[in-house]
Length: 352
Image (cartoon, one colour):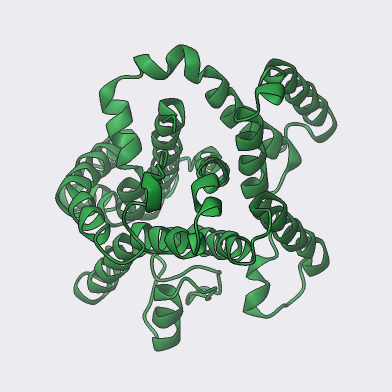
């Protein structure tokens, strides 16, 4: 199957946006309370969700064609996501025990730790739906989506229709939940799960000779809707704003459309960090806060310097983690049952 280098590059952009946003937050929290916190980079998480839906759908066919395909799908997701997340979570716990002043917004209690490792919804000490490793809240949604997708493969349903139906129902639950007090399992009632549906839909468009020719018109339509929403809602960029949803959908669709023109010319360092984006996302909260902490100790309270330093430290640190830890673990995990090559040499593309 074709590898979408444009999507791989977009992975890096999405991770970098999150790192930039968090770096501004670390400055305000540890160095200069008056420093501007840029929240726009949280859109990187939305882009990740769309990419996840895209990749799962575009790689679904081989799993549908073999007996027990759901086992291969589930095992590949587990071996790809779990080891590095567990390592990052354990590192965060160690940080809390050894350097409690460096970690932000976490404390340890048995249930919170257990649920964090199991990718289950849990509340931190501040009452927010976050695991021990704060950024892991996104993986709670990811694993939910993977579980639904695997069940669809298990029951031999159309994975697109099955997963889309469940995600739409979960998103509709957001309207019911409102701002009231609900059990922690209602965490899944969130509009962000629609991004998985958007990603799967883009994959269907990209792989259909008939639909693919209409991508320019689709992009024009999304642009028109975006402009209309910007006028009506004043360009609301909040987490669940429809304007933001339309912009994210357009970004990923445009990246897919641009593959034939730019895919072969994307710089290798960008593709490398696309490959390393999972390590960058998981470990930057452990690396980046060290920069403002050190600057505060030496008395250099320059916010922009801290932001740049945090970004560079996160990039270098995640690159080393990817090369020395993530790649070897992923390679070794492929030797586990159902985690290696599919029967008949079915291939995969852009596995995240």
